[in-house]
Length: 152
Ligand code: FES
Image (cartoon, rainbow, N blue to C red; front, side, top):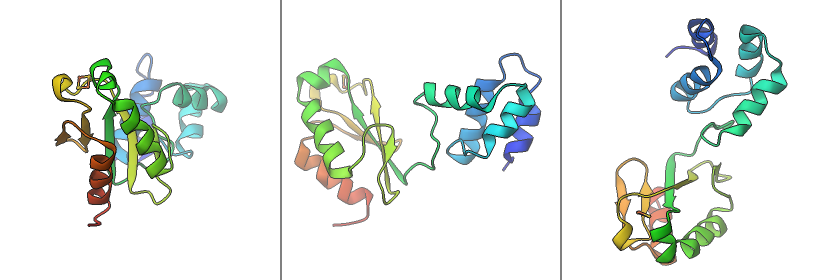
């Protein structure tokens, strides 16, 4: 695994290096740790505030390690029309965190997604990369959360 300094060094000469650097760091580490900010700032001759601003401007970037499981709830219009708002609100309540955040126990990260190709049978939910579920109700979501936490 490349460390942060090596990533910064390898990309700093690129025009518009900031976003590629942030992507590369998150790809390697799963998040962009605070320790990366001064390294990036120095390499790009920018202020640390600018780097923090860029990280904050893109929901894609995490400042903390993500949860073990990523739960993506479809926020597309077709799913909303089929009750996805209730599922999303239930998820926030149950997990105690909002979208783009991770539960306090670090097990689940909640993310929105905009269409999973199951529009006719929403609300749709994707667990990690392959666990696609259609017609998810709040109770169904509880079952997915339990499964993700290894509970029965
Ligand atoms: S809008 Fe949710 S799957 Fe298409």
